[in-house]
Amino acid sequence: MQLKNKQDFWSGIMFVALGVGFALGAASYSMGTAARMGPGYFPFWLGVLLALLGAIVALGALSSKATETEVEKFDWKIAFIVIGSVALSGVLLNYLGVYLTVFLLVVGSSFASHEFSWKVSVLTGIFLVLFVWLAFIKGLGLIFPLWPSFLGN
Image (cartoon, rainbow, N blue to C red):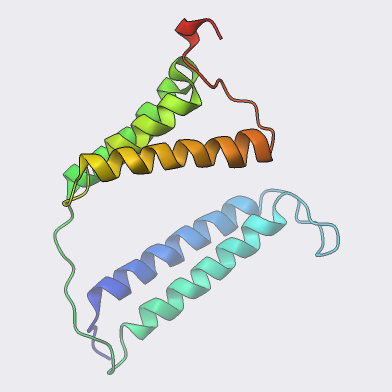
């Protein structure tokens, strides 16, 4: 067997590692049964399925029919922008409220794209703010600070 598709192989290995990690982490919770699921039941089986999917992808990369690919150099700048945007959003949520925080998260993480566009970024941010309002505030009734705390709300 020769490794032909390195992208699929390493992404499969990543899925296996994440799946095994989640399954092991969930195993410390009560499992319950299929009829009465405990808090560890769903994450455990989700981790097992993710690991199984990863193994299938990784083994498929070893197939003689696999497309030959190489792994590109990891772009640390993009990873830093995305992770930094998410971390900054977590810090700012209580101060700026969910609307401004989600908007800033989308616009900030859009800078990671090689095809950045202000227009697309702003429109996507507005759409996601409306989605958060509709799904989480109205639909699920979750309680978040909606507007910046310095506005007195």
